[in-house]
Image 1 (cartoon, rainbow, N blue to C red):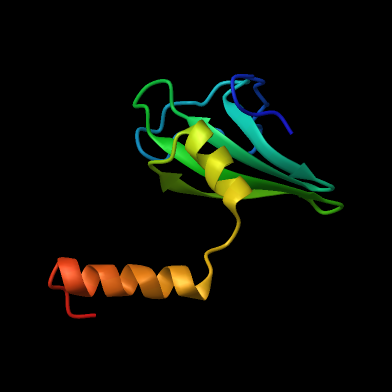
Image 2: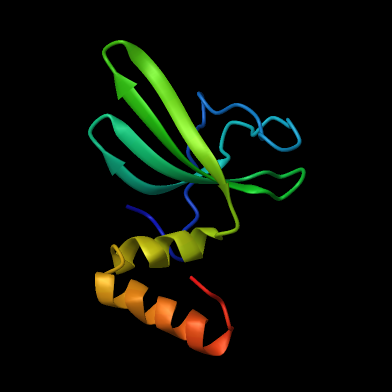
Length: 107
């Protein structure tokens, strides 16, 4: 897996255009976050409007498919969060306590 200051680009043959401005991504638009057998997890930034997408490209015997979601995470943010792992129950409860005590939110 490449990340950090390295900037390898990957062909995004299934995800061809930005979902926001519809501009084409180009041949080397994706940055690889993780690759497994039959799947790639990519971070894309549109060169036209700068919106970012986290996407998964799946390859099976039946062909290729992809799905993605808009994000405000930079590539480096996505790498950092990916390394952190899933949230634990005590972290979620601590956030709930903080929001209800300090921001007067009734959750």
